[in-house]
Image 1 (cartoon, rainbow, N blue to C red):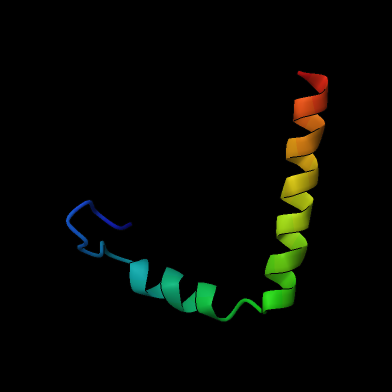
Image 2: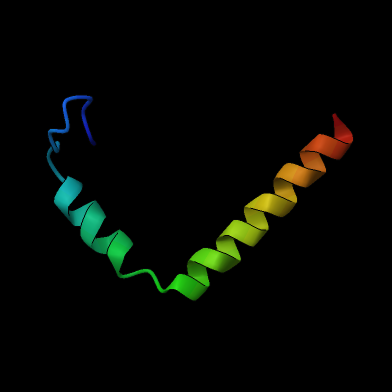
Length: 45
């Protein structure tokens, strides 16, 4: 967890390392999925 003063909490090094290994294509796919879900929520609201 990042704290407001920029300190890194325990376990964050692992989370950062894992995040940097995610291929950009998977991130793009997930962004598309989330965008679609947001659009659906806007329509139903």
